[in-house]
Amino acid sequence: MGTSVPDHILTNKDLETLLDTSDEWISTRTGIKQRRVYPRGKDRPAWELGSQAARKALEKAKLTPDLIDGVICATFTPDYFFPSTACKIADSVGIRDAFAFDISAACAGFVYGLAIAHAMIGNGRYRRILLVGAEVISKTLNWQDRSTAILFGDGAGAVIVDAAPDNSQGLLSSWLSSDGALGDILQFPAWGDNRRMTMKGSEVFKHAVRMMSEATVRVVREAGYTLEDVDLLIPHQANMRILNSIADNLSFPTRKVISNLVNYGNTSSASIPLALEHAWETGRIVPGALVAFTSLGGGLAVGSALVRF
Ligand code: UT7
Picture 1 (cartoon, rainbow, N blue to C red):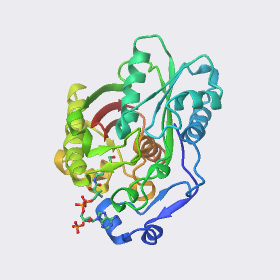
Picture 2 (cartoon, helix red, strand yellow):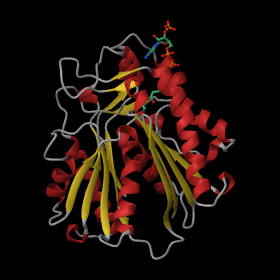
Picture 3 (cartoon, protein in one colour):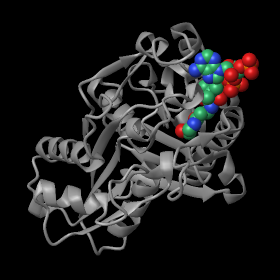
């Protein structure tokens, strides 16, 4: 796995100078203290962040680009409808003769990508797939809207999904679902003058807790385990209170819930790979660990996965 974030740190204190908000409000309501963003007017394309993360993942895996059979990128901040962000990443990293496509499942995109990569490898046609979550959200935000501007950050995370030696390792189960009837509570139009994210925050909050909790229970049960068997839960990093409420709902110890919200905010499809790398680098994931991922994004799209490392 590999990650990349912009160098520039935007703190809650910085936001106090831009918006009618306070460090205290943001910290207590979200758990976020700072986020990485490109300074305004100096943004870079999402594929560039994604490529940096992908190169690190390849280096760490000691793999050359010719060994990758395909690239999947989850993003809601592509630079083009086409070419896809995945095609741009493949080209930049030097991956040739490989499939490449983007998926649109907002903050659930990484888990959707994991399930798709697993299925494509599982049917025997492909051996190794580069999965990237890459977002430059800062350039899409309405910096006058304090309910959204404070939440998000830019970042990318990449993993190489490889065929496991046997069925006891790797992705044990995944569960993907959606509720399009709730699409209007979190949306970002593709056309028109009002091309900005809009969010009914407290509605999203309520459904995020409910749906991410359900998705966790479901994926663990379908693999034949119980929540007590799970060593770590890596949820989409939406809001610290959402993460705590999920833990409460599931009677799951908060010490086993990975969070890096304090430093990165919500980076949408990049949030799980960023949190995963954090867990990995800090020694929280040991060989044999059972790790659950759960996510929810605009759509509403929901996805969970259970992985044995
Ligand atoms: O990845 C999925 C994408 N989105 C999410 O996961 C977001 C989920 N929702 C949330 O995280 C929370 O709903 C928010 C952090 C967005 C908002 O927190 P909340 O506790 O639900 O606050 P609220 O929207 O109910 O607003 C409470 C008050 C309001 O003032 P009044 O009407 O009570 O006077 C807001 O205007 O807080 C006000 N407010 C703020 N005050 C200071 C909203 N944003 C801010 C702000 N600073 N940044």
